[in-house]
Image (cartoon, rainbow, N blue to C red; front, side, top):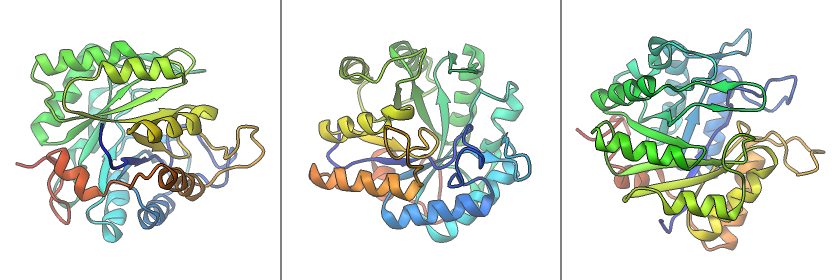
Length: 288
C-alpha cells in the first residue's frame, strides 16, 4: 500500500468505437490530445491501446504506437507509458510483442502482461503459459517493466510462479480488474483476498469493469490503493447509463474523491523511483 494515489489512465481500450461514444479517442492525434489533457489534470501513467485509423480496429503495429508515444512525450516527457500486449485480437508472439521493439525516446516504460486466459462477455483473451513467459522474457531482455494484469486469484499465483522462474522480479505493479463476468467480482471480499495474496513489494490499482468502475475506484482510494480509470473500462458517467463520459470527466471525478480522502496523486517521477524506472525526459524503461 502507498499513501499517494497511482492514477493509471486508460483512454481507449479495444472495445469502444465512435458509434458507441463520440468521446473515445481513436486516431493518433485524438489519443495524444486526450493524454495531454489528462497529464494537465494529473495522472501517474497511461495504458495505451493503438487503433487502425480507418477501420478503428485494434492494431499491434509499433509504427502507430511510435506516433502516439512521440506525440505524448512532446508534452509530457516524464509520463510513464505502458503499451498493450493484449491477446484478445492477436495470437502470434511477433504481433503481440511488436510494440516492445521500440527503442530510444520511443521506448515504452511498461508492457501489459495478462497472467492467464479468460473470457469476456463475447470474446476470449487467450494467454497460454508459453505466450506469457515469452512476453515476460522479451520485456526482461529489453528492460521494460511488466504491468501485471490479474482478473482473479489464480493469476496472482501465476505471477509468483513467474517470479520463481526469474522472468519477473520485484518491485511489481498490478492492475486488479474486477467485475468481469467470468472472473473475480466487484466485491469487497474478492478485492480483499486478491490484495492480501499479492507478492511482497507490490504496488496495485483496482479497476472495475463497466458500471463497477466507480465503485472499485472509490474503494481503492479509501483503502490506500491506486486506480485504473478511463473509457476503456466504462463509457458511461452514471450507473443508469444516461450520460456518456469523457475521459476528462472520469479523471476529474477521481481527483474529487481523492481530495475527499486526503490522497494526493502520485507523480510519474515518484512512480518511476518506486518501480526502478529510468527518470524519463529521454530515458525510458527500467534503469540499467
